[in-house]
Structure formats: C-alpha cells, structure tokens
Length: 92
Image 1 (cartoon, rainbow, N blue to C red):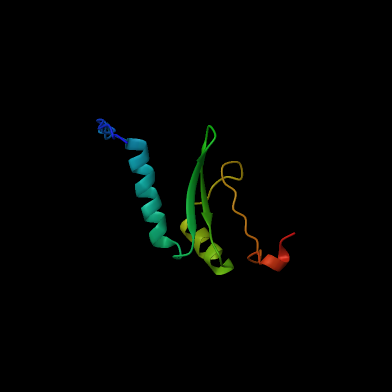
Image 2 (image 1 turned 120 degrees about the horizontal axis):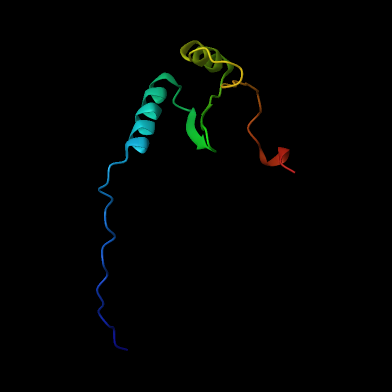
C-alpha cells in the first residue's frame, strides 16, 4: 500500500473587524456578572434583537427586574415560571 502525501491548505483566520459580535460579547459579559452562575444568556435576532436570560430561581428574577430599565409593554416581556427538571420517569 502506498500513501500519497498531499498539501492541506490552512483555513484563513478572520481578520476583519466584528463590531456587532464584539458588542454582544461585552453585553453578555456584563450580564454574566449580574446573573447567578447557573443562568444562561442568549440572543435571538428575527429582525429585532431579543435577549434571553434563563434564571433558575424566582428571587433571581426579582433581582434582575431591578437591574433592567423600565420598558414599554410593546418592547419588553419578562416572564417567570417554575418547571421541575425532567427526570426519566417524568418523560413520556
């Protein structure tokens, strides 16, 4: 069996500025400092930018509401609920 040597080209590293990603990263870092360690912070874009913060405790929701600036009903929705973590016996 013969093995042929071939050249593999490197994938170019992105060197262009990424101002939107950089700003979202700074925002996520700032929010992470305010949130509990087990929270999840994510963004969604569907023509408008949406911020999602998954908090595990009701007390955390109250605390985050204090940090968030007041928003009109049309531009902001904050909801809370309590759902137990799924266990094998509770799934289907």
